[in-house]
Length: 119
Image (cartoon, rainbow, N blue to C red; front, side, top):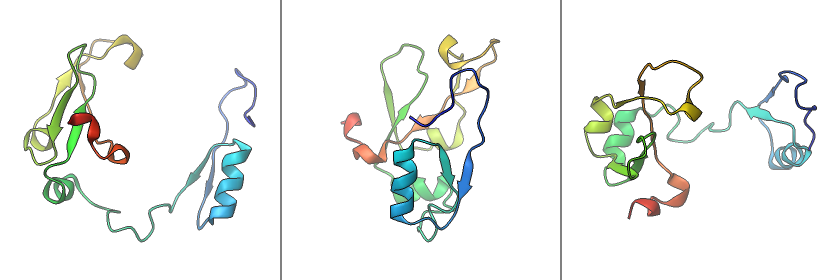
């Protein structure tokens, strides 16, 4: 798939800018990781803050991650809870390298799914 053999150590990831669709597709097909540094150039949400999302999409639903085996929980972007309060959780073994320090668990907004999983 274009990657070096396992155990050969970290690989350098190329950073590109101003890349066209043809070049992007060629790189994806080659299977080498790369970073498009200016992928959002010109998009109106570049530089948006959490407050901006809170105001603009108040009915959108995010999934609370690392709920500790509890049923998945959803929270509205319009809620103040995700925006103003920490949600400290003990990390699961698969999400932590070591230690017992509580982490501020993230929320994930699956925009690509249109939020259907929360309905």
